[in-house]
Image (cartoon, rainbow, N blue to C red):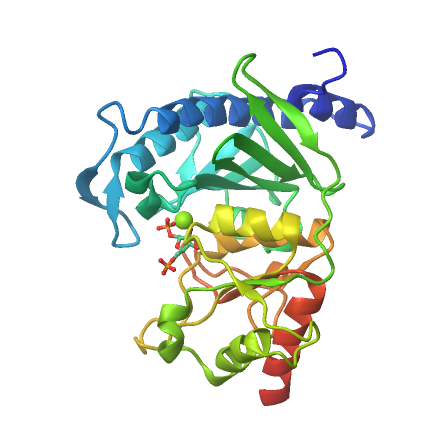
Length: 337
Ligand code: AHM
Ligand code: MG
């Protein structure tokens, strides 16, 4: 254990280097880490105890909520509101901003999370994850919270990351200074630094997309897919297709191996042509991580981190991964624009 760096040590060490650091971020992160351990424990027992299956409720996205999602959501809200450093939270599972109760100490941080992403995979024991995005409020601490405090562009994130509940539990995050990965050692209950300074390969060999929906895509996305499958692309051979259907797992694999993840706009419903993934709790944190690791994330034409969110549950087309692979997509979209 002597040479192993825990996530708490890592945060404390980094904080010491920031002039004027108050320890607030460390407190927030400690609650996040504890929540992750509690959720990981529940995920590991999912097949054994009565947390598996549907509750029958419909969440704000119109999807059926599974019990484990609800549990993860409850744990995060409960723990994070006690951190004393947040003024507000937002969750994929809640329609509105969750303000920290008046009787609790408050601070200037705001966290937006997807408590358990990829929940359709729970029942079949496939990887799922928690995604988080952290901001600082823009308005004065004493004034009433504004919706613009929560709805900030992704480029304003002060930290972002995810927890992957896989064959082991991993915490990957960035506070702006590199992307670092920690693996939970269940024997000591600590996240240990296992992947310092992750860099995504400049070019990958993998494309990840739900190809079953190709007929609903725009022309540019179809063109991009045929590029990745063509033996005449930059690799001179078709990319491998890898798609789990769990954003955290698909993203994590591509972060380490290189490649491109795509969830394009789906044109089948003219009323909702904007893709599936949510800008604030899914695209922004992943875009922050991938950029800090040397990759790119766009909605086709525009950098994800530059999009001004208009509402909490807004969705965006999402192309993210190795810089050269994402540039190919962007060039295709630009040529047609
Ligand atoms: P969820 O937040 O309801 O779990 O949905 C998001 C998930 C992502 O993890 C994944 O990338 C995507 O939905 C898969 O969607 P599809 O089944 O349409 O390919
Ligand atoms: Mg989700």
